[in-house]
Amino acid sequence: MHNDSLAQSKALIEKFKIEFIDLKCIDLQGRLHHITLPYHDGILERLLVEGVGFDGSSYGFRKVENSDMILIPDLSTATFDQFRDAPTLSYYAHIVLTDNERSPFSQDGRYIAKKAEALLKEFTGADTSLWGPEFEFYIFKKVRFDTRTSSAFYEVEHAEEFYTNAYHAANPFDVYDDFRDMACKVLQQFGVKVKYHHHEVGERGQQEIETYFSDLLQTADNIVTVKYALFNLARKNDIFITFMPKPMYHQAGNGMHLHLYLTKDGKNAFHQAGEYGNINELGRFFIGGLLKHGPALAAFTNPSTNSYKRLVPGFEAPVALTYGQGNRASAIRIPKYIINPEETRFEYRPPDATANPYFCLSAMLLAGIDGVVNKIDPVKEGFGPIDRNFLEDPKDDHIHFLPRNLTEAIDALEVDNDFLRRGGLFTDELLQQWVNIKKKEIKAIGTMPHPFEYTMYFNL
Image 1 (cartoon, rainbow, N blue to C red):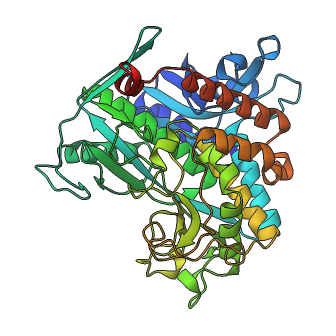
Image 2 (image 1 turned 180 degrees about the horizontal axis):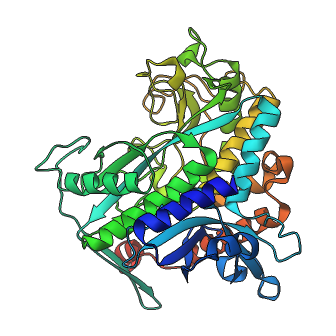
C-alpha cells in the first residue's frame, strides 16, 4: 500500500514540479491546521518513519506538560494544493504518540473513523458505510463583527434579497451560480466528486453543494477539504462565506445533511422492496439506534451554541426524533425519489458543519451499530414512521424532540455514552474533554450581553 501511494506521490511531484510538502489535520473542535516542509529527495520516506513533531496542547489534545506528538502523512490523500503560490503537495496526516511504537493517538479523528468502520464489519456484517453530504452555506459581500468588554455586534451585507423562498432561484437573480461552478471545478481537482449545486431556500445568499457517496474516512476528509477550498476560493474572490448554522435572524439555517447506507458484498445492505421506504430490518434497526441516541448524538452532530438557533420549527429544519418519507421536520427522511435499489438510503438531517466531521460520522455510525446490536425498532420505540406534518397536526403527544440547546445535548451525552465507548473508540478522556470544552462555550455565551438585550431591556 505504501509503495503504491509513494509511487503516486512521486508521479505528482514530477508532474507539478513540487517544491513543498504540506501536512494537514484538524484539532479537537474541527479547526484546520497545517505545517509545510520544503521538498527534497527522500523526504516522504523519512516522514513515513519519523513524521513531524508538534505541540498537541495547541490543538486542544493534551496538557502542556505532556504535549509532544507526531504527524505522519497518509500518502493515499495526496493532492496538489491549488491555493499555494509555490507548487505544494498536500496530505492529511495521522497523529501518533512519541513512544517507541509510534502508537496511534486515541483522540485522532481519522484514527477513530478507521476503527469505527472496522466495528461496522464486526457487529453488523456489513462491509462499508457510504455517506453523501449536503453543504449549505451563505455568501456575503461584506462581513463585520466584534466582541469586546464594551461592545458586541455583527453586520453582513448581501448581494441578493429575494422576497420569498429562493430555492433553485435562477440567474441573473442567482448571483453566485458562477462562483458555485468555479467551486465545483476546484473540488473536482481536489478529488471531491460533486453531484450538483444550486441556490438554497435562504433569501439572502444561501447556497448548496452536494457531493457523491464515499466511505466514512474519505467523507470526513472531503468535508474538511470542501470547507478549505470554499474559504480559500471566497478569499480570492473578495467575498465571504459561512457554514455557521444560523448566521441571520429569520433566515433559513445551514445544515450538513448526511445521506447514508451500508453495503455488503458490493450490494446495498438496506434495500428490501415492498417495505416502508424499501428499507429492510437492518436499516430500520440502524435508524432506531440513531433516533434512540439522538439527544446525546447532538453533542457531536450539532456541537455549537449557534446550532440550536437553526433547529427550530418553521425553517424546514429537523426538530423531532422521528423518521418518515416526506416531513423535513423529522431527523430522518427517506427520499421518495429513489428508483435505483442500490441507492436505497436515508438522510440524517440534524448535523451542521460546526461539527468535527470525524467525530460526527463515527458517533453516528456507533449509534447505528448499537441499534443493530440491540435490535432497536424505531416503530416500537415511537419514532414513526410519520409522514404527516406533525407540527401543524400534532395528533401524537409522544413525539420525541431533539435538544433545544447545547446544554441539553451535553447533559444527554453525560447520561448516554456507552454506545460511543464500543470498541474503545470514544475514551473517557476524550468524552470528558469534549464536555469541558462545550461547557466553557456555553458559559461564555451565557454571560455575554447580547445586542438584542439592549433593544429589549436598556430602557426598561
